[in-house]
Image (tube, rainbow, N blue to C red; front, side, top):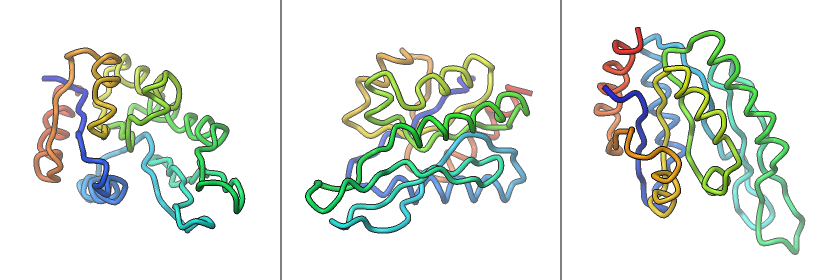
Length: 171
């Protein structure tokens, strides 16, 4: 059983809300979750969302966007906030979470940064890891992990079944 799963999704799909729903469903089952999910909190000047990552172990939120002002094209990723959120993974590893969730493997991870190292550490620790990958980032994802992962549909029931199977394997 492969303990690394990715949910490919289209760029126009609301993956952040979907992942929040998956996390809520898994929490209802009493799972100890580690990692982070994204929340889009409030509009910036041009109506793009201000973003934060929630540490799933304790609910702490880390802002990861910065408003670059009225002449900017929108909110931009704040690397410092992303680095602070990366600390959320240390608890998942030391506390042996049932599942590590990463909202997405995105542009930063595709470029070698973001939460890429934390994803690798969780996988190397033998923890089940679940994340989303936008279709246009799939080539970078495949280059990063190779073939040792399973593709899951945007389907909460299928995801929950995989999580439960992966947890049994990890136990």
